[in-house]
Image (cartoon, rainbow, N blue to C red; front, side, top):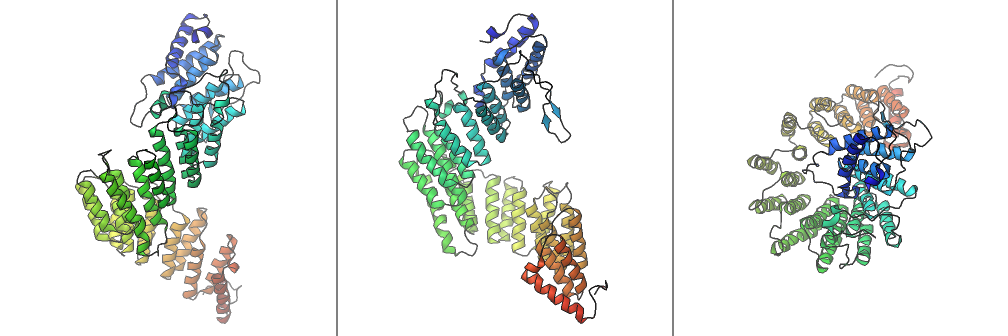
Length: 593
């Protein structure tokens, strides 16, 4: 095919270009949807191939030689397989506009393609549907999900018909971005593929989906496509729509269909169950599991973990004041499922450590640390715990406020030679706060920094709140300064960060220092919370300085807060006016009380 478009002109140039393009055509662009795993290396030679192909293309154009759309697509394929979307998009834009594109980068990093002329170069072909599909694959490989959708929509806008593989890429992007409405729409569009004539388009299959059962051209949504759409609904919080898609899949893709297999159905069921789990609907998750088993689809470890996680989410999302008996049904259901998993003989590797991790988290949310440790001992009898195991175990200690067990978790981690991460340290510090152990909390925080870990905002807020609650406001102030250092913190202080220390200073009748922090927030363009203003005003009132309190309230009004509408502040303001008048200090005197 390629030989037909390579006309003998400059022998050395054409031979080089032909070799590079043929290398690409040995691995067609539609194979791009087989993404290597994280630890799988890219094929050797991809980088030099794409660079050489690009250079030879430029030399060919300068000599008046056209490689046609097939040649362009082959070079785009090289960029795509290397995950280099920027190179692929340069060539697509070149084909769209009909002239050579030069890549420019602004100071802010934005890439632009300046237009030099409105006249098409006859040597540069217009893109076809393969051009767009290949660019979409490049963006998919580089995990730029919104761009996959953008260029899929652009291809449709230009009148190109997307095939099943391209739609699958868009559904994968919807899954990653949590775009339920778009995913449902693409499933409906895929249903129309079988009614189109294939005469104008070469059918595409892909080895990347062969193991999922799609060895032939996709003429409609298969179980994998449905699974991606269902997952997109779950990630968007629309789990009911995910279940509707699952029911639709049963009608559209029957078990004996050529484009389905058990793995695809398991994926779709698992996605629907995960959607229920994320929303905390544990009964619906168990119902789907039972339906799955009755339909002769064998759940895997991920499926079981998702069902168990639904119990944890259900307990966590319930009211903190709920009675203990309200936590029992999902807890008992999760533990009952574990027993069923241990009794089944289909897969002797189950239950694995992931399933036990999910169960320990259920116990954590149910505030049952003893049961969590019991499951840990059962799991480690034959399995090796991981960082997630200890994370769930520490959460169990934190929820129950059991500092002795939290110390035991850290000891166990040392025995298993696993280093605590930010999440585990954060949970341990939170446990210290619940028990009023500010010194131990500060010790863990310093140990965390020494280990080179950067606490998130939540951990900073926890340690500062712990210190403030125990009257150690000066230490909390030091922590606030540490939070402002990029060396130790993932993000700079927020309004809430300042608010914690402002409240502490105000409670200790140190309003002047609290006011300094308030002014510092102004300089950082942070909008103080109402509680910060209220604390300072109350502190000035308690120290007998009503005019300073009124000044703070005026500053509050200037920053967009109308304290007249806040009943507490309005009553405070009236009380301050009376106090100022009683003391014989006119509001315009400017003196401080």
